Length: 97
Image 1 (cartoon, rainbow, N blue to C red):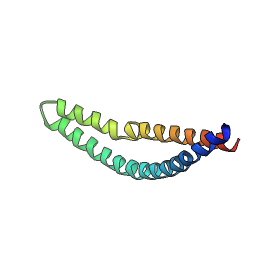
Image 2: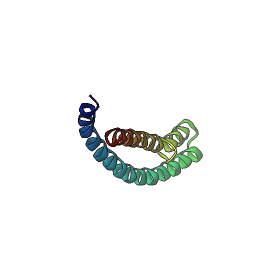
Image 3: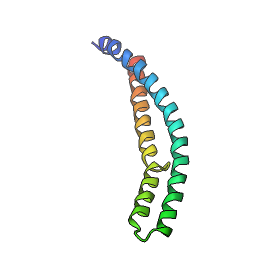
């Protein structure tokens, strides 16, 4: 019965290996783009905070800048990719073990 499960798990290992590699590559590119964009949004938000009378737009910009900074959404995406890689590793251990 275990051999059947191992045979069924093999395609998932292949798909997960390719998916993790592609996602890590895209995460690296997107992280660089979002890092540059974060700096631009921070500068525009600070400009808006000092020029405009209403501070809501500047604060909204700062919240958006935090979300696209390396400690915001890219960190969540990296966590998910690492969890997929851990699942892939556990499947590989199941197949070889």
